[in-house]
Length: 422
Image (cartoon, rainbow, N blue to C red):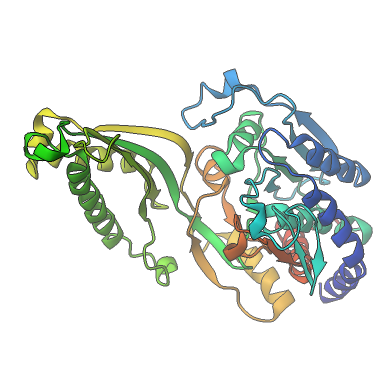
């Protein structure tokens, strides 16, 4: 195996220029949602070069709507294709899904970028651009891992199923569509930007909306009204208390360095119509974290019970009910035991390349791993070369050497997991 690893490493070192070129081409395509097709065309071109069995389709919204974990604000996925490419094994080995998403979040305020957000600029060993870390760099690592093994004449026993999916950034419709299309495997790797840490567990999340009602009155006689802002503050304080209660129950060692493992964040507040009027309505919107070992439904019930019981703190809520809505995106939590063979295989590959043990933690955010694990019953580990701190931020970048390192680790892990056909 050491001889193979040396050859693998040398091959990847020689591919640095090609790695940069492929990643730059992907980053230069602004594959925000509804604009994924041109970036997917580059993926298809590369998969054809690798002689993989291709499956390209536009997910059908009406079919997906029947599933309880489908979320999307879109009416159609026309011109937004999923791409799955299979490297068939010779038989007798474990199969592996390599799952990546092609969609990126919008670039935001262009003035905060040092260069064009889709320039693919290379500087000081880093490639810059929206999606470089989240997660086109990881996508290139996956494709390089496959190409490396093929170039060395290595045949795997188990199937490798590469996936480039849409809609991850809004809840995972692309991965859900792939699962419902029948794609399953004995394990899965998602190369999200983890700073090369291994995440066998991840929190899920839900978006919520709370509408709090008051009673309008003139500001000069505000005592004749009831301020929805003041009542919303009571609601906000109770949500903070719920966050504390939920996090006290988290005793997983993978969260030992995370101050708030499953946060409840209020992200927007809207209320009032005039400075001289008592506001009669305030809307709070936020995100509720879901622990790896609980379900979306359990988290919902806990929030719903808190809202129902707020009349115990303030009689106003007994007759002026707070409205709770679950809307927008959601991500399922995911958990794989730290003793699982999939995590062990990836850990061993990391050691072979770096000579040290990897950092193993729980992800502070959700990914499509929740769908793969909970819906597809596919054990999933999140691991990738991107930098967490710059994902979704201006001047997003990825270190090119990390892309190559991750490719080497994934290739070694594939040989171990899928088995080599001698």
